[in-house]
Image (spheres, rainbow, N blue to C red):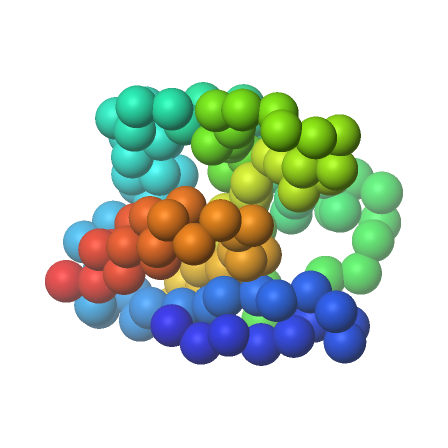
Length: 128
């Protein structure tokens, strides 16, 4: 898993997994995997699945030619609201992009280290 800074401000964690290295070998299976992880977590709450690829296609938006599909699994770990600003860091999203021979799994850094570790472990467990 690598960390990069998107647009000079957003810390993004990424893992590219070759299709031959992943048990969940389709977008549907990867989405179902994350939905199961979220459902099994004691405080996580699944919110929605956003089909980013379909949306961008429907508005004739630009899509990188290497991207075959793109979805966001939207969920929240919020167990408390200690201040108003924490709401701006929620909910979480895990992005799944299908490329020709691989899947890119990416998410923005979580505001709390324990939740960051959970998200990293979920992504890394996808690799055979």
